Every structure is written in C-alpha cells, then in structure tokens.
Amino acid sequence: MADEFPQKARVLVVEDNQTLSGVLKYNLSKEGYTVLSASDGVQALEVARSEKPDIILLDLTLPKLDGLEVCRILRKESSVPILMLTAKSEEMNRVVGQETGADDYMVKPFVVRELMARMRAMLRRRQISKQESTTAQNGVARIKADSLEMDTTRQAVFLRGKPLELTPKEFDLLAFLIKNGGQVFNREQLLDKVWGYDYAGDTRTVDVHISWLRQKIEDDPHHPQHLITLRGVGYKFEK
Image (cartoon, rainbow, N blue to C red; front, side):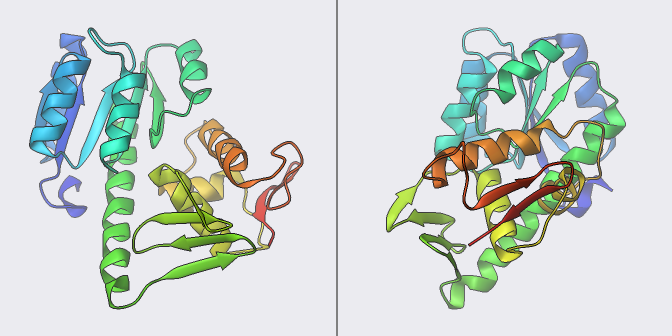
C-alpha cells in the first residue's frame, strides 16, 4: 500500500502535459497519496519550497526552467527523493550524462504500476534513512575507509579531512559499499539494496552513480583504487 512508507505521503507531480499530469494525479490519489502539482519549473520550485513534499516526480522538459536545473537547485536545498521523467531514450542519455542529483529516472511511456513500485521503494529507503539517523543521534555514527570518513548522522563525507559534496543517493551507495567492503555486488543487487527495488530492465543509473563517485573520491578515476569493477560480475569497495 502507498501509505506504508510514510502514511499519506505527499507527492509533487511536475508535468506540463496536462493529460499525463491528470493520469498521474488520478492514480496517485487512488493509492492514497496526497498530490501536489506544478506545470513549469519555476512553479515547481515554489511548491517544493512551500509544501515540503515527501517525493517529487519531475519531468525533464518544462517551460520557464527545465527539469535538470530544477533538480540541481532542489538538491542543494533538500534531500527529498526525486524521480526524473524523460520523454525519449535520447533524453535519458542526456540526463544520466549529467550529475543532476536525481535518485532515479524513467523513460516515457512507462507503466504506472512500475512507477508506483519505484516510488514506494524510494519512500521506504527515505524512511529507513530517517530511522537510522534518529538511532545514531545518541552517538556519532562514523564509517572510515582509508582516507575516507563518513558521518551517517549528518550525511557528511570527508576525503583527507576535506568535505565532499555527494548527492543523497551517492552517499547511500558509497556507505553501502564501504560497510560491505570487499564484497562484490552486481547491478541488480545494488538496485535492490540501495535504491530499494527489483531489477526493472535498466541498470544504467548504477553505472552512472559509480562513475560520479569515482570522480569525487578517486585520485585517478580512470584507474580506481577503491571502487573496483569486476567485469561481468559487478562492483566492490576496496580499502
């Protein structure tokens, strides 16, 4: 049920196609979500800031301010889960080729049932993260690996003592791999463990996030020493 994680979650639908927006609003409301809406990028920022939604469905191509810029701005202000919607596979390539801070991506046309499943997974992961953060309040929860240090209470990362800017999903992925150092995970397993949903036919988002992390934590991203690829198998973190 939609209200499991959390109850009556507030969803902001940012879509300028009124037909699709109506379909999404209808199905989300039917599942018990409280639905907010915006039809352009500027309005999306206004609604997101004033209403504080639990999750955002964000179209890539929007009037006034496109989805990429909206996502970048919101990510600097909030860790709210963002699911980016793109109209073509070519747009998908454009999105994954840039660090927007989105948690996930879907190409139109999509099956509403799959969209709902991904949303539930994203909300579930957010709820778990909040619970873990609350549990850690009584003490500083830190993860150390070589010159990397992660403070899971403050969602902060330091490389050789200097702070790094990671998106929420980059943080989750890095923390998971470090906690399970040396263990190899394939893309489908990482989607399940970090993103929280079963393999749905597209694992590019895992590769993209690994690439972004390498750019930030590796001395030479082309010859990584920590985020290791085992061709045909998966990824692992080596200290």
